[in-house]
Length: 488
Image (cartoon, rainbow, N blue to C red):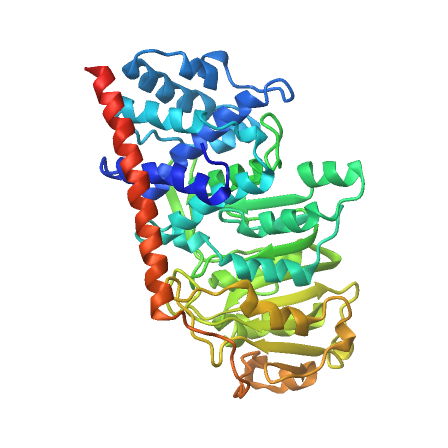
């Protein structure tokens, strides 16, 4: 069994093609992998970590069942039973559904996972394998997975300039599959100095909330593979609408809230019947009541921050210029926070086409002041003009954000200088603009560093990918042939 991240991802993923013939979507396949991986790793770690998994549902018990039909029946029982367990176990098995109905294919999938000692794999390999599965899931746009997947180069650049430190409480209130939390973990892991730092990172540093249960499950598993969370402990991820009520105060927020203009909250009575659909949140800690989901998330993030806390929030263009509640919130943002940087992201980098998004970087002030606000400055970096990205032919890479990271000058913000792509605007000027909008634009004349791949390079890459896929499916075909022969 190969142990490089790329080879192992290909090995695990290749079986998805076989299961897809049974009507199993890629998202469903990753969910089944999640269930089985957790059972395998919990069994591997049984001597070091107490587990609340009943003996009849452990990995070892599944392996010992000789008959395929009984194995499938026990697997279905395990999913239902484990969903009622507390802590991380209950979260990962929340509302489970077994989408595998062919017992021979279930056994083959168990055999595939059993061939690797997952707990012994390097943490980066485990993380990359699961991230690889999630990335392929995101490609399955019709399954809806793409909306939860923020481009990883963008996430890494944001974390690099935010520079989290050990002992902080870091939260993503719309965590999706956990991209921001994992990037923060990877950044911190190389900067830990004490045992207390390591324990804090594993148990207290990272928090998240996610509305969609199956996505929260993927996030929890993503964190668990990196050593975050314990089978019997309170999970770092909660399921629910994070906008409904105030969240605990944290030191840093890194988030890309879901796109879409309207919030919708369904209120259900005790008898299970829908009482009403609420389109806004009436919270006393919000500056304005609005049905705009992004404006509500922006207010929510600010309410979560401790005094001196910092945030990086991805928002669509309408947050920069929308009137009414939007104008109220922008003016309050400049009064109560130091909004020091705005990164204007290009189109073509998202799974939702033509999305125009930005990243707001700000710090919550210890004392609000309109007077002081007029003296502060917003720096805007334009990554749009002259750039042409597409998910498949020319995806955004980390190198495309190197200049932004350099201009941001996280180690000494006072040393910032203007460039063709990086300009400063005083708060006084922003407040005089119509509706106090931040939608500043200018013509960038600097040459770009983007190079489209040559046709031969692209063709060679396609041919290599096809050959690898053919080799994997040939291997699967041989394995299935052996299974069928044994059954005969």
